[in-house]
Length: 568
Ligand code: COA
Image (cartoon, rainbow, N blue to C red):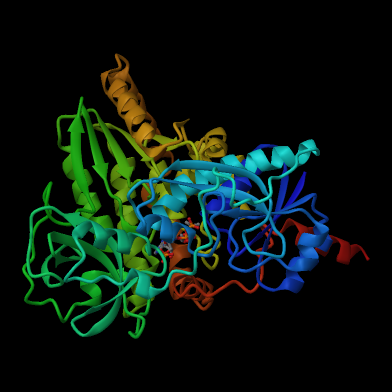
């Protein structure tokens, strides 16, 4: 079938549905919901069999839902309606939640139900639930709905609140007043729930040192206590605030009124205010940890769940030091775990945007990632594995490919290209790694195509070595079994020798330094050259400037339109 996506953005959920429907044999084209006229034009150009709205912020124009079956993906259980579905589910502590696929009509979220899927709601941020459970449930429900639509005789179920199976209700847009933290009353769990239900967007508005700030990236502190609301400690880039019965860490803040009104590490936003606050080192039960190491059965596991998968220069350097330390341990395999939401999304674009010289900080950041990649590629003492529990994008994909093996959770999405960031050339030794693993014949397709890729497709191309388990917990259990088996395999030594021989041969053929120099020469032009595309694209990304048109790489119907116009 021809399916048109009408969506606010090509976000992770939309990308996942795009790859799943493609793999199920459908043709998908994407139109951003920018203006009703564009949406109508898109339908006219593409003549889709079906329209799906995976992520919409406005109603679908009447002309569309009257002429086409339009299926809306709503991130709520049956009967739930309104724009803050997941926010309410988290703050209310719901046990079960779900996704409903319903047919658009005159009333928002009240159309006939084509399919639904439910799950146990975890205690985590809205962004994490959205990227994991909601996305998986959306895939299940959309595939079911599409199959039913294809059958032709399926009658969707009208929404009937008298049905005892319907538990959802109409809920309003959640306001900041619904999220406000009362530091003198709210216990730690309530504070965590309030921050998490607004994380990634919009954040919880709060006051600190007389400044209005939005809070993100909240974690439990198990030992420290203090006067409720006070900032009682700092650790890494996070600050610790006492609650009535404990304390929480806040890793990121946003000051809308400041020169840099986007999310930044908390200690950077409050630089001046927290000079006298005691600094603690992260431990097992106390502090804010963004890098840690553990060992089991001859395998070292290095975790780095950086917020939003963004890796700043200092984070890369700390990770490199932790990696070098891990390499000194008496283990056989090192697994680079990333985090449960992202493995890595490459350079930290917010930190770069906030730097005095974004060009210099870009240069520092790309070199810091390259230094880390180099240590991984040149590891001759261990076999290495990148374990993609979550998505990876741009340089993050190639950093993963620097490992001997890449294992991905089924459902992970990769964006192994840089060009969308203002024609960025990219580094991380991609010009060595991509042809080596995906074959020279696929390099152009991957880098120029600029399309998201499922873990399965990445596996077929050689960017990923194994794909297993849909859920993060199952994936971690299975990868531990596999890593232990790898460390204990009788062929381990010969495999290590083989890897080291290959590396030496490759190095003799063309040194890694040469790949790096060639890549960085192009990156220098991106950062310091006359063409400002990268700086403009980064600004737009960080400031979340809405796109004014759908990229032609995903708007297939506009490519068709172009061809037709050229012929006529
Ligand atoms: N630096 C800083 N923040 C980043 C980031 C990066 N490299 N990559 C993602 N983020 C942030 C986004 O700004 C967003 O922030 P929010 O929490 O305020 O909404 C959040 O992470 C999620 O990103 P989003 O784009 O909404 O997620 P997605 O899953 O839909 O898309 C990507 C994933 C990787 C396609 C997209 O985030 C992207 O293009 N990132 C930039 C990659 C890049 O060019 N890196 C630099 C070159 S190495």
